[in-house]
Image (cartoon, rainbow, N blue to C red; front, side):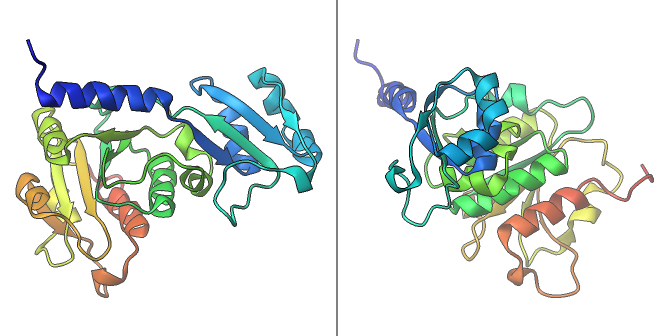
Length: 261
C-alpha cells in the first residue's frame, strides 16, 4: 500500500533533521553547549586562547578540541561572525512534543511566532522567555528561524535551556494549546482589547502569546484561530516596537498585576 504524501514528507523531514548539524560560535554559546548534556556534539575548534578560557567546559564535555592558530581558524561560518576563537559543530536540540513541554506547575506561558525569520529576533525572544519563565517558544518548521550560530549567540545561552519547538502547522499548535486549556492571544497593534484586559480575572490560566513578523504581522489564519486579538497598552504607537521587545513586554503583561491574583 502506497504511503500518503504527508507520511512520506514526515519521514523525509525526520531523516533530514537527523543529518543536520549547526555550527555554534562565540565563547558564551560554545561554553553553554559544551556544558549541556542534552547536546550531541560533533567537532570543537578553538584557538589556544579560547581553549584556556573554555578549559572547564571542555573538560566537562569530554571532547578533544582541535586547537588551531587564529590565522588558521577555518570553519564554515558566515563572514563577519564574531567567533572569539571558538566554534562547535552540534546537532539541533530535540525538545520533544508540544504537549509535554507546554505543561507547567503554575499557569504556564508560551510564545508562538508566526513567520518570525530573523535569528537575532528569535535569539532575543528566547533570552526574554528564559528570564520571564516561559515554558516554550514555538515557531514553524518552514518560515521561521532555525537553530543557527547567530541565533545561539544572540540568545546568550538561553538556546541550551529554553525549549524552542518548530511545528508543522501553527494553527494546529494553537488549537492543541486551546484543548490544553490555554487562552490564546494574538498581538495586533490595532486590537481594541489590551493584554491586561484579556487576562484580567484569569491570570491563573495558561496563556499563549502569538506574535507575527514585523511588517506583515499575523497571518489571517492565525488571527482567525486565536481566542482574542490584543495590543500592548502603550502611550505611543505599537508599530515602532521590535518583535523581540514586544514579546518580552507581552509576556510580562500576561502575568497580570503583581500580587493581586
